[in-house]
Image 1 (cartoon, rainbow, N blue to C red):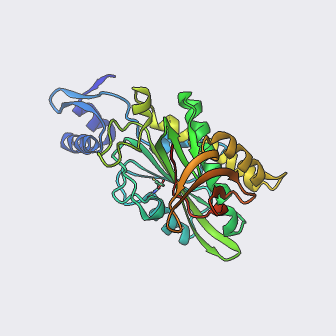
Image 2: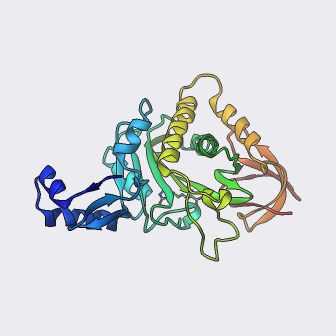
Image 3: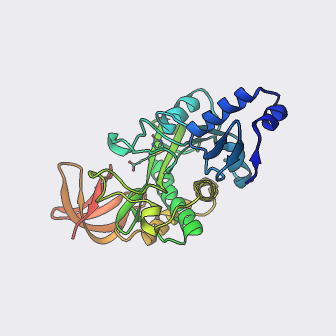
Length: 310
Ligand code: BTN
């Protein structure tokens, strides 16, 4: 990394030296490590691992996600932003990436902790021609896509917990939230949001026992850019396979999900719905819902909130 004098930088971009200093301060505020000051010149300490469209776009060329990438250093929620944009006509395949979320949304009204530049906070706009009942398959497919991307980049083999939590060593490092605008028989648009814990080195005490990151599991940091690109490519493959209409795509997703999930069959679970109950999992039904054998017979889990016990 070379040292560049403030005077040279100023001349090249046609600005004053004090303007260059202000730009450098702004970049530092965004987390870019730059050593030096106006008198000595500036030196980039490391290439920042920022999810900038200019960086991610060429890596996802050939996918539906290569056309429109939006990036935010700080935002409330990429899902909220993508939903608003979709309502205004944002096309299928648009991607919303953030370095930090101040109001990250989780499933069931929970929040999603979104520490600055540690995780991947990504939402994509999709406009599949399906009914709302069929979106569960998209949700399961997204879990499979995350699992494949993480395996490709890190060689780690993650576990899936229905409907779409992604786990390592029994702890969650990735959550998926689908929000949609639909008529009873037709989805107008949906937003698929993925939160992936990559380089977090710790979690608050109330999350410690159930949350983890790739860094905590491997003892090293990972490139968020590489992971985000692998994720979008893998999501493209799964989504295309699902909406292509060839064969029985949803049945295939359900079969692969069951295979990738250690808790989909034969595990004692607690289900947090209808007052809560316990039972043994019996795989997924033809629509992708989890079946649990409880005292009263086989029940179908509708809204999630499944914990393995014992
Ligand atoms: C879950 O509760 O498991 C789902 C978490 C989903 C979090 C992601 S982060 C990117 C996108 N924007 C949000 O506000 N939420 C999703």
